Length: 382
Image 1: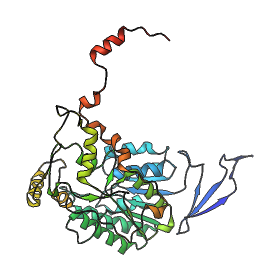
Image 2 (image 1 turned 120 degrees about the horizontal axis):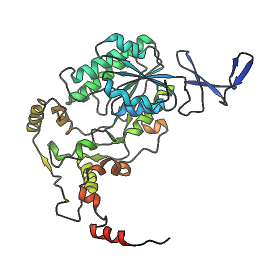
Image 3 (image 1 turned 90 degrees about the vertical axis):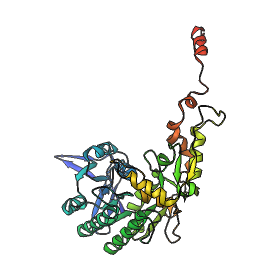
Image 4 (image 1 turned 30 degrees about the horizontal axis):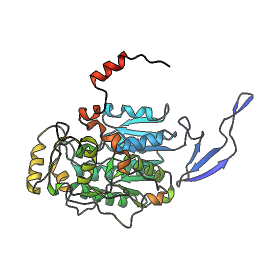
């Protein structure tokens, strides 16, 4: 987006001319010729002049992307289905910055209304399991196609579609296959769309640490040997923010992956190094065993679990246990965005898994009851 620096703005109020406190104003010109005026020094009460729509804003990645956009004053449109799940997003920006639009995945008018006035549209919607109302194909392909068509019809300058690592139309995994087909549909409708394939992400509400960490025993095919390059969700959100405002990323494909390759088993061992007390083989040592289970049996068990009304491990998730992450050498990465300092899992792991420690481990090293009583009887002089 072209930026043109101008002199300070003056506003006429009757006979008075009031100059804004901003030292300079940026005129941001989109590729369609629309001019957006940025006001402010870049803080919460500033305005970038842009309007961005974030589909899937209440999801794991979407909430962090919304926060990064809104905190600098980008007017953010949040399409939502569940009123209770989107309320926390309101406080991520200043008054009037985060705006909600109710939409339905099969209601074309609601999708069109969500993108009608936007300069950037991010599609963070994606599911890796089937529900009674929507299959993975319904969301990852059909809904993606509707959003892309609405973006094209509205003449929105930028469309950023968030796919997945290993996305490929011929994958054995339904999730990877539907994500791959979704990419094809987007490119057919909007050739200049930007495709982003993040690796498996970790964070407070993730499906990685929360899946591998608290389980005492895991019966999985391959004994958790799946290899991935995990990334911090904040790094992924930071990259998406840069992509959205950088026109040089138009038509490009990005793969966002971490600095190190880890297996699920290695991640579990890292977690257990924090949550277990290896110096004591007594009650503080949980049994975090990993057992190998034949794929057909594991998928059958997961299929039976789908009878429950809440989300549980599904057969396609079991299938993905045997598919290692493959890096596309032709795709651009964090480095192409100027992001070199990505987070390493070991540096932030403790803050995300400490709540799973045994209570006696958390209390280890604290004064005994007798010692506390003795300390109360001492007189302290300053």
